[in-house]
Length: 444
Image (cartoon, rainbow, N blue to C red; front, side, top):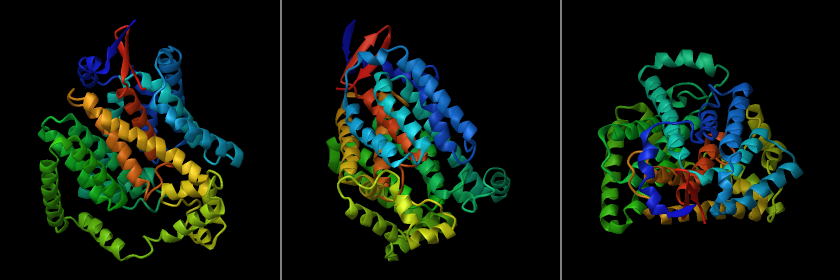
């Protein structure tokens, strides 16, 4: 056995990564989970499909990563920083009670993958391709329903007849426009940040796909995911081009001004875009934070009652249900409420300790990935640089969206997020073992 440097392996792998779509490289652990995440309200809404996805994922994990034992040759790396958070999650789940069995099972698979799957890189490009393809499907549906409203009625009747939130093109092929905006955001961020990190001049069809994601996202009228997406893409763009920061900042400013002008012009012709802009105006005039200030107050009350360790994972919705606010939401058909702010909910349910155990590994890993990104460049579309920055962008989007959404608790968000974490661990390994013609990245 011999050890090769990360840069030596990078010279060989990128062409292999972007060459073809393969499900024989360990990606079947993540692709079924991604399918569930992107279609949990439609094609994968039944428990039978959910169990099938989990079964395929678990069997693939065992057969590809655990049975062959290759991961055992790698050193522990930054993935170990997540161990305290998952221990906290399991402790709270079993002490307070398991409120969400799906969350428990999927978290377990993803936690094991953080060490086992980070020993290989070949699966990453396949999974990023699947994520972009699923998001592109939702973008196509959103735009098609906007262009041809008559197409939406039979789709709603077949898949979303019981959901009053599925009313028009805004929700696309989902039961809620928030869910649709999340899918479009992940597609936009992974695609745009991947192209930014890859650094080559994008082709016309690459730009068209990015514009389609952005336009469809505007059509949903959702503000939080749109802002989080713009922040993620902007941070990646500025960091990748930090060596010529002044010129980059100037270009970014020009792009922003042109984008604002284009959106303003577009809003005069497309009511959906105008509605999105109007919602930003309404938010600036709304002192209740879009009606969420009372939800935040409940979280702060819980935090003050037990600031260090919190009141137990999943306890927030139970607490709100005992209040008049919970009764009001129950009358409206909402049986379980979240804070719409992950950081506040973690404070309420797990205290300062729980919030720290989540934030520290999330931020440290993100910073480490961005700092090590210089060692991974080129490789073309879906090469290592593309995939690394797609993963980094997805993580930034997730962490920003945590301020206004529930991504840590929704499979639409936490599955792509933790998959991107595993991808970063695999790509950014400092040492790489070259064995039997395959490369296995290690994190230190």
